[in-house]
Length: 114
Length: 112
Image (tube, rainbow over all chains, first blue to last red; front, top):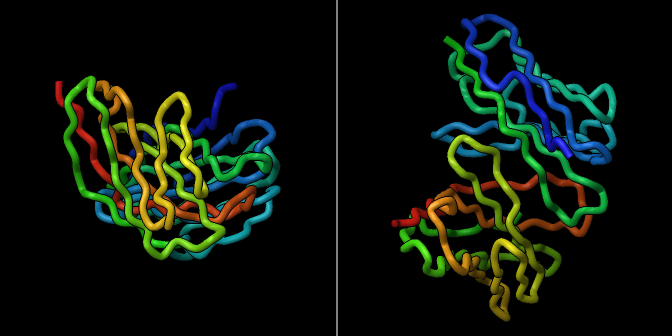
């Protein structure tokens, strides 16, 4: 099993540019989560999906952030326009319906907004 | 989710048992205790979880007090590769869909 796959691993962009982060969950997992990690705020849950449907997006910081899950094997997190304070590591995680809470995390996407 | 309290950092000698405490005095009856760890520059990794009985797997043991207000994660023979931030989380689950809320965790440093 390849695990949760995220791309890109690193991205450096300029303020105002659009950023798209991608995630491929583990095959067969029906829940997908987006987290953000910074030194100041730690790991924050941004949004999660069950069966491709967004369930709770209360952690999304503002309207510049959006997330989609068009099918069971792909999700995107988009920031438009990006700002320097969006610099962070963004993690995607997935979970099986049969599991009792175990999340499998990807390696993360490190975003730097200049 | 209930709040947890963990020490900010701990040291342990290589080869010794590392005992990481966690207080969760407001845990409710249907909430589990989960432990994850995060090695530098990697995504968090699941270690173990339990409801009220002690649990053991190939990575660690989890000891939960009878009143469930605290727990201890035990790494029986710590190695340098166990240096990481360890997160104790309480959450309802049993197949539930909610995401886990991570606190600041304990930075465990294994000394050679």
